[in-house]
Length: 294
Image (cartoon, rainbow, N blue to C red; front, top):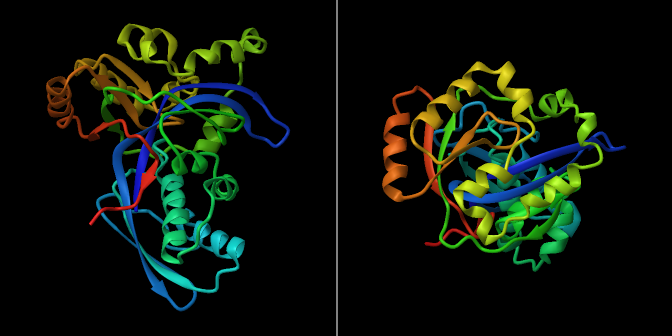
């Protein structure tokens, strides 16, 4: 299975809910940067091996979302078989790119295929929502507009042509929980934030660079940028590279820019590669995960 990363094209954060989460309105877009998972049959129980350029620091214990997803699906289906799972990690973790959630979604899909169980996507999504707010998105089409704590999804128009991204990931991990915990919605926005957030419901005309800059923002930047010099530096370098729009993805630390052409994308990548940050190029994808071909 290929487990794609995501960026938040826009993220508006509202009041805190009774369950402790904040209400959000966000446009999620899957990108071609991905992890890969391979599943092999096992009589019972699960094992997880992790390799790849971003494997360092990834837990191999049951705390990993891959193993949590595997155990959750087995319990949901009453499945007694297990699996040996190999995760090749290319998506940086702690970067706001959804790598762990995407891995969990790919695990749900991959194990259902391995066990030859037909499980409706809605059932997988409901199970995925118990693992993480972003997991349901990676089980379906992209882009999508997410509400609630991020688990309620509305598919949006396909992006034609695909967007080109340059992603810069500082070598610092950011806690999503801590970032949201520090965010306080301004009183002036308590009554208007849902109306403003409707702008995030992507329409073909809103992809135009000028409108993207005007309509799409990330409320969590006001929490992260003042406290994290590495993210500020990445932002500065990204903007200087010539991308047309720069945003932080999720709660960071990744920042991304949109390139208007393949040539501009390559040029920005070359300029940013000397900054000491991890740099990736990617394009928008039509789904959050898919079976690996070949």
